[in-house]
Image (cartoon, rainbow, N blue to C red; front, top):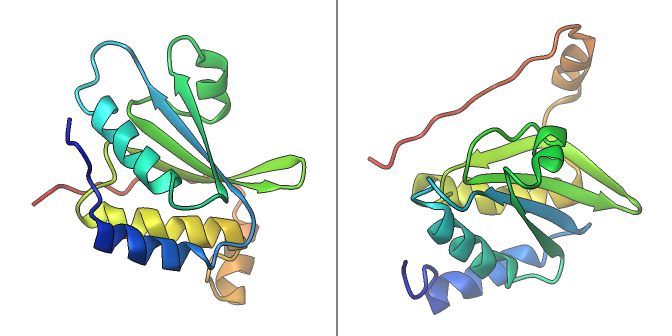
Length: 148
């Protein structure tokens, strides 16, 4: 496990970026005691990011002992991250999931997702939103990246 993933320059930039957050973000981290090579590193990186804003609340769960919570959020792999917004008394889940450590090319998207979730603005055009709302079947998009 690394001493620290984020250096002072990166943390300074992220803090500035996080000033654009509007509503609090709930970040759920799922791991398991055994059979997870990257869980400890992922949790360390996530904690470093969470410490950069008082608008991010981290909840840590074991996928096996907290199976009800894992099922509620459709998490079936570890390490797993769920990003949702705290909207008053409600947690609004937009379906954003990260599996594995969000490092490398994924890190920028991970940081940007905090802003988008907290503002509850997708950036999609109205025509696109209308089309998506007209779909009858549930769609699940998986994006895979590799550290190359």
